[in-house]
Length: 147
Image 1 (tube, rainbow, N blue to C red):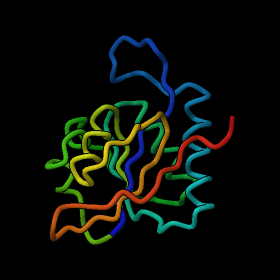
Image 2: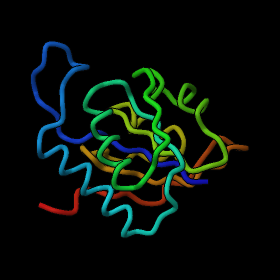
Image 3: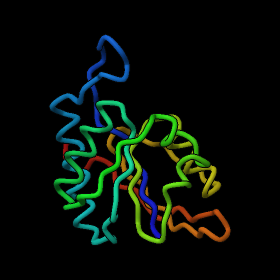
């Protein structure tokens, strides 16, 4: 089954609380651009999106879900998208997209696949996951395709 992991787009550098940093216009563009590239790849669409409660992640999920037509978007605690044991609780037999933060997404990808990969802003990573073995194979990534 497919699991997808996406880092939020570029966010404001300052806010009263880190959790409240919004996407910049570039960050919105990045999220939309990644979703468009996803559609061009003709990958299996996720059935649901699990997203960190932080504003920049939620705004990324809003842009991506609109482009991909995914209506099942669940906002969860920051912790639930930063540690694989917590994330695994959301895994079903359908493709899922997790949207979160670095460095935790890179750590989760490495924990599942054994592969260390850079996780740039608004990048999306595809994993072929075997729930019986709780391991996966790193398949490919989408990074920002427009300047």
